[in-house]
Length: 88
Image (cartoon, rainbow, N blue to C red; front, side):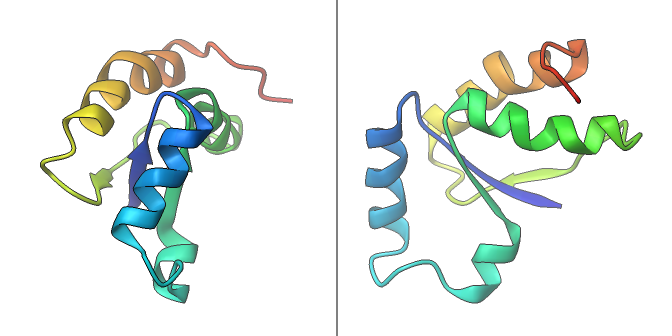
């Protein structure tokens, strides 16, 4: 399971990280959190696809974070499912 936090740009990602983790990212979250732009998160999952993983379970940090849910559904999932990345 991966916890996902997305924003369209690095500034948005940084703002969300400060909002949800004002004291910094705790060790638990460092191991499980994938935070970034859609391109960065697609890159993260590309390594798993290259290793043969076909299915992912993801959770969002905040279920009311519509932006993360939307970007996951419209940018990340289609790119990962369609192989729209370089898995070298």
